[in-house]
Image (cartoon, rainbow, N blue to C red; front, top):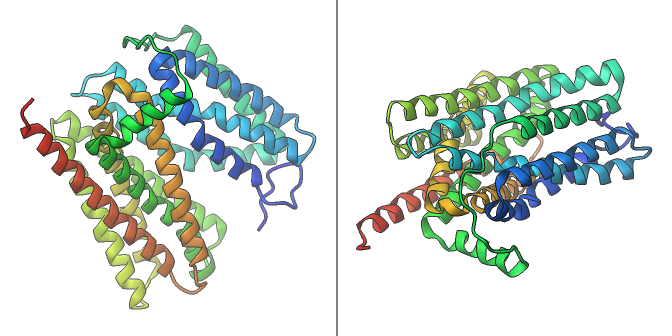
Length: 369
């Protein structure tokens, strides 16, 4: 079914893909900029870009114009990825994981709320109303930025950002052995979720025969499970449980569940109720792991939190795109094999990189200063 999402209902939603591309790439500039000039100016700039682009989308006379405005809108929205860097700046290590858990829960809300609100606006006022509402939300964010508390509390280096400096920043992040391992673990873990997101729709709708409405309910249920996982990790942090314990639990569940799904698929035994319960478990484990992964990477280079958050966003977007594409391309139309295989591969990679991060962190701890 072709989505009705723009000036031409007979064309696929290319503007969604264009938005995600710019959303994935723009933080590569925003992160280092915020490390030098502060988070608030960069977030404010992103809000302004987002609002202008949303108005352009609402007034777009044609699909090419809409696609162009969506690209710009993705650039503006990408400034919001600095939320994890802001949390790292504003809170100490004893509570920052709990704040990161709140951010992860907010991220999981979007797959539930966005389709419901978007469908309602589409039916009531047409597709242009969707972008008009986004512009309104952007204006509210700008007002909050103007009158809200100042979260730029960290001193910034008095250096200008240039392309060579940008390259050096990312070289510093990616050459740090512990930070790199955490980033790769996060990317691989997100690959599991992306494979599920793509493969579950193919399997449940085309193979199991679910309706789009039934699938939407299942997808919302799994998003709630991800929120529950992030909430649990926040509670564990409040009780003083170190992040590597919750990460170990999350990755172990992720790998075990993926293995069970793969084994069931190879045995040609995939009852829908059991498969859905495995999907719920997968997203629950992802919610548990995400806050600790963010904290683990940020702790290594606290003065470059913006660059680290940008690298995280870019890597998970790339990993998710590859994982999703492989799941779709390899889908045989009869089984969940492509989804299960990609999920298992990514889950084992995540477990490996997490083990590498923990091992290298311990080596650094025992090395003489």
